[in-house]
Image 1 (cartoon, rainbow, N blue to C red):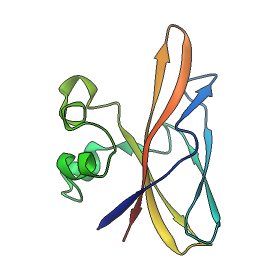
Image 2 (image 1 turned 120 degrees about the horizontal axis):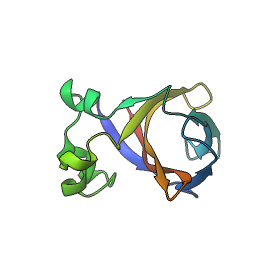
Image 3 (image 1 turned 135 degrees about the vertical axis):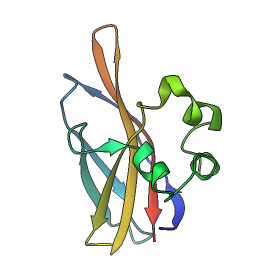
Length: 120
C-alpha cells in the first residue's frame, strides 16, 4: 500500500454519548466536491499496530503525513489509542484509511480523528 496524502477535515473532534457509539464522518474525497461518508466505531476498527506490524506503514511515515507527533505514535502508553478503519469511496474510486480514537474525559466521551489518508 502507498499512502499518498492526508485529507483536510472541517472537523476533527466529535462528541459521543457512550464508548460504543458510532461517529458519522463525511469528507471530500476528490477535487470535484464529491463527499464520502464513513461510520467510525471501536467495534468496526482495528488497532493501528496491525498495519505497523504488517509493515504497511511505519510510525515515521504516519508522522510525516501529519497524523500525530512521532513520540506520541511510538509511546507505549498510547499504543492502543490509535484505531483505524479502511473505507472505499465508490463515487471517487479511491481507498482511504481513517485513523481515530475514542476517549473519556471525566465521564464524557469524544472521538478524535487524527487523519484520513488516501491509499493507493
